[in-house]
Image (cartoon, rainbow, N blue to C red):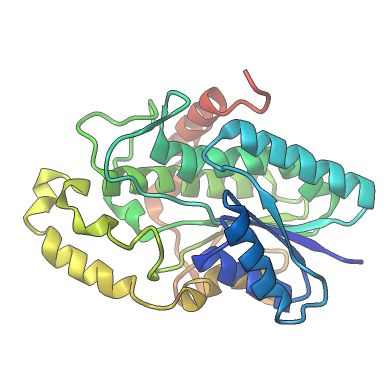
Length: 296
């Protein structure tokens, strides 16, 4: 039976390379993005590889939780009608903002990097469970190491620094990923985090040159840190996509869950603070409050 895969932010960069890898593995791939022209080019590139099943593009602004709900409803309805299981969900979407922004009254980095993938995953859980064995892959980041580990509110105390807030949103999502894996144990739905390490993408191009994205304490050292980070984000997106492709397709991971696939496309130990049950409970409350499964 044909198995489908959904890749968010799949029209370029790491997401497109992930979609190419899934198509090569035999999946019928749907890529999601905001721009129809980019979507058409992505589908053309995937289909040029002569996959077993043609790819398609679905438009959605993943910074809008209403769009996320609409997307999830469409996918669930299609899978129920066709009977073809949703085998893989890759939450690849991510964004870093040099200046603070609001999206529907909530800080943008937290929306895009955590609430959006959280909501899409939760809404598609019945579909993924019905199509088990299936896999959820959430793309994480090494920036979790600079995050404030307090989740009493969407916004941590102190000033806005884009790199740290990006890392905190990614930490919330990694914490959710590990918690979800435990929650779904025994259902046939495996949950993984994939750390791409780094690649030259639209997100890293230019954003990291602004020292205001880090706290004053790190600002003096930022040129040094940035050079190191730039070296790690200068590789091709095709290499950075390997952890996501491995998490989605590697047969040696069958039956496993709660595994972090590192930049070398091999399992690594999870970032310890993400496995804290207190953090998981706080992230769960915050997520349910700001991204309810039904529109408020």
